[in-house]
Image 1 (tube, rainbow, N blue to C red):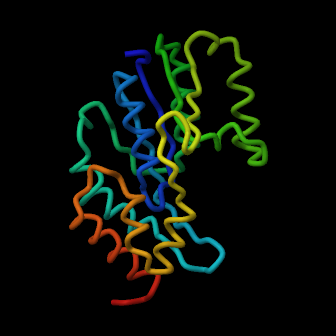
Image 2 (spheres, rainbow, N blue to C red; image 1 turned 135 degrees about the horizontal axis):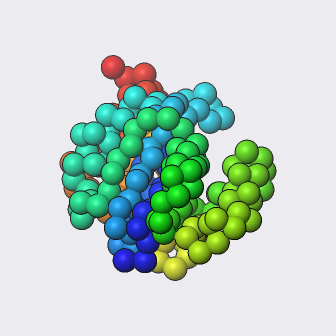
Amino acid sequence: MKYDLGLIPMSAKPFHNGHYYLVQKAAAECHIVKLFIGTGNRTKGNGKAITGDQMLHLWKEIYEPFMPASGNIQFVYEGVPVRNVYETLDYIKEENLETEVAVYSGNEIEKNGKSLIWNRYHKLINDSYWKDTLTFVSVKRGEEGSPNVSGTQMRKDLLNRNKESFFKGLPTYLENKQKQYIFDYLAKQFFKIF
């Protein structure tokens, strides 16, 4: 193992195969992985939402229990995922723990534009305390084996009822009946079918 601890902040609305690739990578490279999963709502453009409650249900019923090789993954369903990562790093530094840490993300954490994330990221990478013990692992969509899956596209597929495309984006470990359940469950909110 390269690292003692892997930290992954994730909104994952919905959780897709690109997210799963990131989790697999971290689980293979770290003794322990903390997967911080956002439980807030996600509304984009059309006013339709994938709610935090919906995703929490799916995580507890499908994603977490059936995820292969998840023995070293801790699933954390509280707080704000990026803030949780920074608070964990603050704790490690305050306690002066000798821990090699990797923070895993798509390339979002390195993008300028989200000033709080950006400013905090630059403070960390310029902090001498973390010089030899903190690594940011940025995985770009569609490169180096990472699936080219977009949450935005998956939400469009859901809105357009494009089940085939939506299924293709879901984590590969899921069976078709589980994918169907996810599609139907999320579609209820999008189309108000109760």
